[in-house]
Amino acid sequence: MTRIRFTLLIIFSLVIFTNCSDKNDVNNILITSDDYMKFDTRKITVQSGKIVKLTLKHIGQLDVQVMGHNFVLLKKKVDLIEFANKAATARDNQYIPVGSDEVIVYTDMIGGGQETAIEFLPPEPGVYDFICSFPGHYAMMKGKFIVE
Image 1: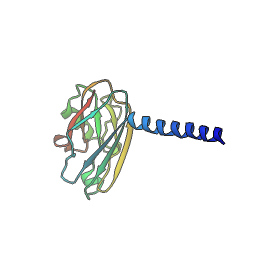
Image 2 (image 1 turned 90 degrees about the vertical axis):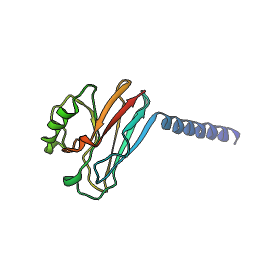
Image 3 (image 1 turned 30 degrees about the vertical axis):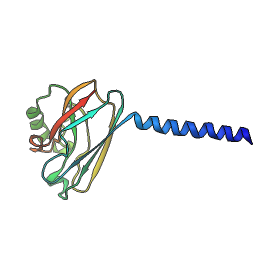
């Protein structure tokens, strides 16, 4: 009986330890967007080497065709205006230019009441731009993604 209790204690400890360490190894990010073309933040800071779980939630009501939003993390030194102009012509690809090598990661395009999530390893430490690539939105829906 003592041996069973000891074994159960070890198993329970391992489960608790594993669950705690998993939570510490993830950068959980929630970003909201709305019908007024804005993200609720302009700065996101994450730890290098930890998985990023980014959730984008559209808290507005307008349809994706009218007021769609996504989260696009761009590589360093990408010209925002040039990228946004190319993205505006990529409607059939969720406003992400086909074959673009300027994007690190992006979410699906969503409308009011929807949410989407992605998981990725952050790029090397530094400062990166993020935007919404729906036509015209990048002017107001942008920010800095900082990897420490």
